[in-house]
Image (cartoon, rainbow, N blue to C red; front, side):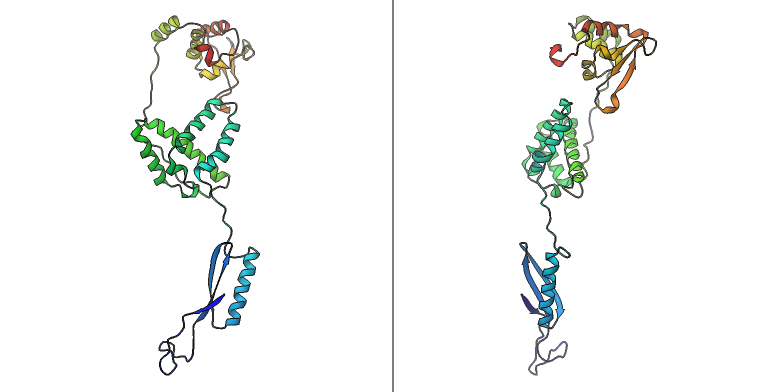
Length: 278
């Protein structure tokens, strides 16, 4: 429909006090509903026929998706995005790394337990809403490092949302300052006491970890075919699985590490899991 706005106020002589014109003045506007939204525009015309033509042209342009209003995609809430996209992604990508999958899953559970954050749409999530989550978690007596791990999950989640086109940009997620870094080197005396008191296969696994610097999971995956005496003077260990793809490496054995091979022999060349260590 069209209607007129900005009509002149006429005096007793039929003239407008401002423009000096006789008769009615003003310009035509049009308005109509399009996909549940009100479209209102000024034609800047005083002719009703021209105004109706402009309204019709605008309707046609919208139908052809050429101008104006576009149908905006619905941005999911944090909880919706996590359940429908993020968790299935993490479960499939880290199927071979259950610890990483559990790390993501546990972090997501903590984030979704805070309802004001879980119910926010991703486009509405700001640094202020993240700060409110941190304020919610701090009274529970958590260490700074624990909260930062949860924030890392949230940051990864938002970066993926941008990558997958769910949102245009992600807010900056800053880590909390004040993490405690534990740095302690076990002495030779402490290592000897531990190995003397530890039962098998824990003692053999501990000997391999201490002398090679392997991670526990890397040690648990060792097999005889990964050990050779052809490389280097005293043999080598091939690490086939690590925390990242870059951790695949060859670890050369030194003369002082004869205990490593002895420990591997005691393990029998079989893969050791957490259940075997009690």
